[in-house]
Image (tube, rainbow, N blue to C red):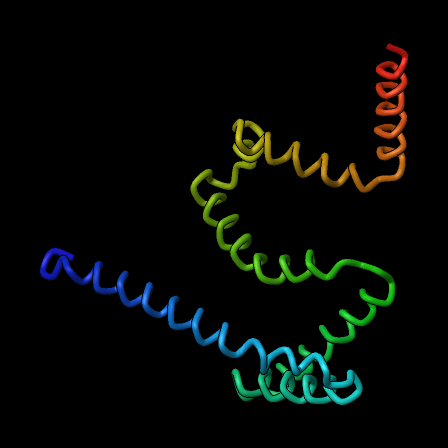
Length: 159
């Protein structure tokens, strides 16, 4: 940055041009991409499966990756069969490594002391929001909130 300060602006201009070119190419190809929706599902799914197998093998050229792909495919099937959302699992797989690295970093900084996770205001707020999110899924909590809101509705409707 010191030797050539224009480098930052050149990179920024290239990224803007790349985004504009990507937008133009994407918009011009929409008509052709929509035709994929016309393909019947029994024809499309084997093609998707073959591309998944080729892609997972091509990354590291290992059979183990194919077994991992198959295991996660079966897990996804079971989750869909029993109406479990897949998004939390995907987020956990993607963010799990970052969580592990940052947890180790935090524990090294605090000499393996866990109290900063529960005593700082930001961590307390995040912990409270997490607990409320988990409780919101519980049936007894939903009934409690539902009866509380019904009382408020009746109190306001009397006036």
